[in-house]
Image (cartoon, rainbow, N blue to C red; front, side, top):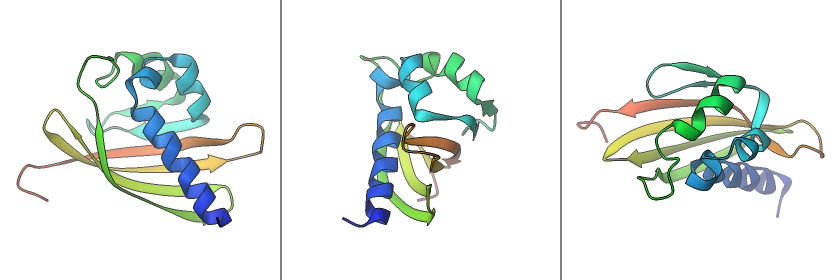
Length: 128
C-alpha cells in the first residue's frame, strides 16, 4: 500500500467514524477526530468552530442510536501534500442529499489524522 493510499484510507475511516451515531454522541470521540483548529460550514450555512462542534454535535441529527443515520456514498480522496488529505462525498439523510468536502491533516505521529475543515452543501431535489 502506498503512503497516499494509506493516508486517504485513514481519512475515510475517520470520516465514516464521525457519521457513526455512537461517535457523534461522544464528545471524547469527537475530540479525538477533530483538529483543534477545526472549522465547518454546515449544509445550513452556519459556521462552526472546534469548541462549538464539541458542544453541539451530540445533539445534532444523526447522533441517536435508534434515529436516522447519514448514508455516505461516492467517497473519494486525494493526498494534497504530506499530512493533508481532501475527501469529497455525498450523504443522504432523511431523504435529503448533500455534497460534502473535508480536509484531514496529520500533524505528527502522536495525534493521527484529524478533520481540519468540513463543508456541506445541500443538493436540491432536481439536481443529481
